[in-house]
Image 1 (cartoon, one colour):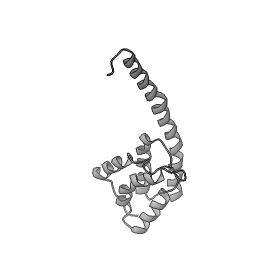
Image 2 (cartoon, rainbow, N blue to C red; image 1 turned 45 degrees about the vertical axis):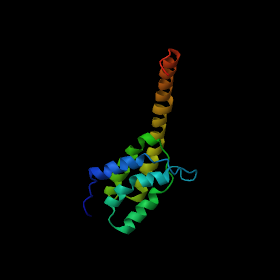
Image 3 (cartoon, rainbow, N blue to C red; image 1 turned 135 degrees about the horizontal axis):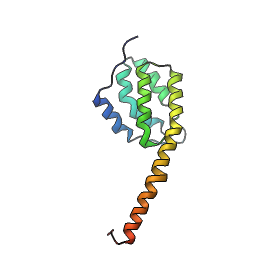
Length: 133
């Protein structure tokens, strides 16, 4: 077995910027799968130098995916680590599916049920006091 190829900072930065487009191709069949694959593709290309391995990895990463867009980078890191270790496809799939739900719930709780109401309350208070133009 060959040693795992390390991802350089340039590749990681590219994936972070691409993760912002997670929901750009949202659909009701696979949800965020196309955006997920677009986000991790630079890492997969570094890890899988063989075209057949890359194709196989892309295919199983194009399956259903849905989580909170702000926390997707955590899942990206875990999955790419498993890909580097050449883990079994079923293991990678199971970890990805297991991480989707909890991170989606945590992200929704933090963003929609905490940050948005607090921001709305502060903004409403500022508007009542005449602080907004």
